[in-house]
Image (tube, one colour):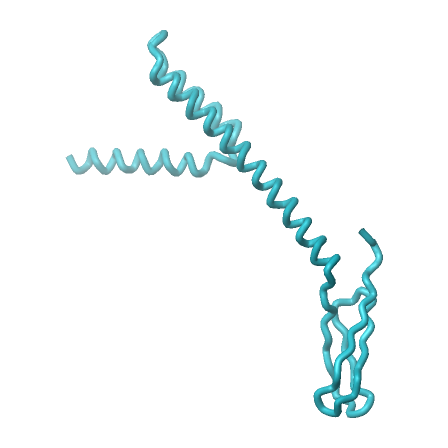
Length: 137
């Protein structure tokens, strides 16, 4: 990858007098040129070239890869929590499975605060649903 800006030359025909106009870009995104024959001015944008577009796509691909890996890690962590809570709630050993499941859930929520808002919303919805059901009875 080059650190120097790409030098790009653009030419076009003046729509007023059909004079050929040439513009050289040395890294700047815009250039204002005047037609030598009719003095009409034009603002020309520097075109993107294939290598620049490829760099943008590579950066986007890297971002999406990191995002997918983070999502996979989050999903694995949440799935492990769900399995652990189910185990604690269904296995009869000391009779304190519910208490241990709650401890496990709290520990996970503390360790994974960034993943917790959706779960906290679900818990709050469940609490509201139960409260509304009790009020209706």
